[in-house]
Every structure is written in C-alpha cells, then in structure tokens.
Image 1 (cartoon, rainbow over the protein chains, first blue to last red):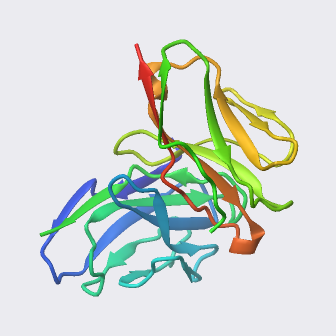
Image 2 (cartoon, chains in turn red, green; image 1 turned 135 degrees about the vertical axis):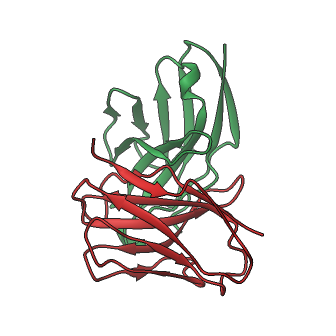
Length: 113
Length: 111
C-alpha cells in the first residue's frame, strides 16, 4: 500500500537534546512538508521541499532543520534551540508543490520533559 | 495568511445533512478553496476543493457562492465517522500556494 509513514508515534526527550523525526513516503511525490500542531490549534508550516536537495522555510522554521537527500525521505530535526518543542508533528506529501492534494502521515507526538 | 473564518463548533444528528460554512471575504480570483478534515490524533485528510463552480465527490459537495466570498461544505448524510475538525483553506499564489490551516470547525455527530 502506498502512503506516508512517520515514526515513532510517541517520542519523549529531555530538554536540551536534539531529536530527529522520521518521514517516509512511497507515493513517488516530489513535494514534502512538515507541520506542527499545538492543542486546539490548526497546523503551522515548518519546512517544505519541492525536490531532492532543496527545501524552504515555512512560517515557524526557527529551531528546526531538515534534509532531503532522497525523494522518499524528509526527516525533521528538532534542535535544542526550539524553545517550546512539545507538540504534534505532521508530515505530508503532494505530487508537486502547490495546488495539489496533500497526503498526511499519522503524526509524531513529541514530549520534551 | 489567506484568511478564512469558520464557526468553532457545530452539531448534527446522525444520518442528517450537515452544512459547514466558511467565509473568505478577501479571496482573490486565483485562490482555490480546499477542505480537509482531521480525526482526533490523526493527520488531516483531503475532502474536496474548488475554484468557482460547485464540486461533488464521493465524500461531500462544495457549494461556492457566486461572489466566492463564502463556501459551504455539505455532508449529505452525517455518520459517526464524520465527527472531526473540518478546515477550510485558501490556496493562494500570493502566499506561495501554501496551506494555512486555521482552527477549523469541530463537528459533533449525535447518534
């Protein structure tokens, strides 16, 4: 089955530690996205990538970093510089950047202790 | 941000139609209207999208006002599985065609 996988579903980290969230898709989509969702709020865009080896900052990129070395993979690193990292993180992909339908993964809930 | 306004919450009885409104008075001619929904602790899923004409698919219908300043997502027969947060999103070239999710409408379906 084609789709987007995110792992792990739940992640706990100590304050000050970097953590990397995984996102893999087998839909052959060019564009991939990372969003953050806080309780009772909508999604906010962190980073997006239109093609391999290229990515752009979204609205709340500070304290995060990404890489896009393979078309299928778009990992997100939450660094110690992110002041309030506890949140629900969602990865998405679309055929290309723009008007196309975005397909979302199941999300990773990160809790920083 | 491309702005939309939706009611915070709505209720519907099971097996009845549901009309979810969205206001987007600042919409421009090239903005697409997208609807997504999100079940608890899951990622959003695409529902429907349109530009000017009304649209139908297997999940829902989208009715777009003639002046495009508002739209309505119609679920023809609500089921318990339709209980979710519904997001109305404008996709605008002016903002790089990025999705801006507001707080959406939380739909409760009453058995």
